[in-house]
Length: 353
Ligand code: IPM
Ligand code: MG
Image 1 (cartoon, rainbow, N blue to C red):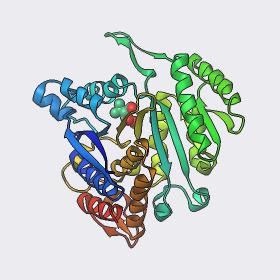
Image 2 (image 1 turned 135 degrees about the vertical axis):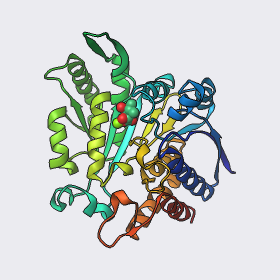
Image 3 (image 1 turned 30 degrees about the horizontal axis):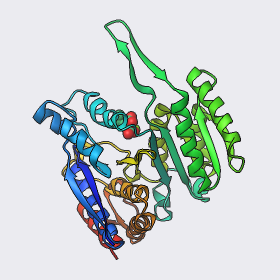
Image 4 (image 1 turned 90 degrees about the vertical axis):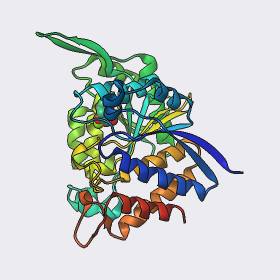
């Protein structure tokens, strides 16, 4: 029996359309080989849409995202649109409207990219495989606050419901991994962090098989560079997670490699996007690295309950990298320079065999 899914697709701005096109192709090919088919529905949103229609997230797009089995989202934003508009309406808008409280960002250093890591070989010789679990609905992103000519405030709010559900997600994820959860906070200064730490310790007690530790965010930004192999699941708040995942992706060779999933496991809603932005300066030039977007399709397949199809994508990416094919951001000695389209096509063809 063929499994069929409908997927809403926000192609986004800048490099969005080209990397989304590559990712759809890879997803279709990996699915085909496992008897899974996808219907893609175009759902415009972002800076281009804002310029054309006056709204960055049209109602029909939001509805299409609600109705679909999953959402593919390319990066959004253009310099010609005031910073903050598209971020607020599309990125945060969708995460909050769909209550996608878990932002899950696997950070894996592939052996073939060891020479691309800015860290010395001895620092990464034990491998890097961290699952970042970022709280995605509260904290400083709750959009409370004010600004006038003389003063501005941002309000960070964390509820027990909000904290407990993300911590529960992290512990659950650790059960299937190396059974360690590191919680990152700033409990020496912030009340929200102190609350977070108390809930972490309480929930940790209900998972006796899992090793736990709490680390301050400033120290964590340092440890990630000093001993990245020490970490398994890292759970943290919304803003800290935003910052640490960009830092960690560089350890794997490039920001362009980082995938991401925004999930609500209870309502079975998922939106899949890379962790990088729309890079308008290289948009349409066939030079962007599509791998972060493509690996997000692996997360999509896993979320829909098809890890074997997801593995096809990971294997295909690794195979193509091992053969030496590289986009400009990860070019190394004796590698073969290719563009976005060719990278996408090579991965798709591998994922389908
Ligand atoms: C991310 C991005 C967003 C965030 C921006 C675009 C609002 O940086 O997904 O990490 O801060 O969450
Ligand atoms: Mg970010």
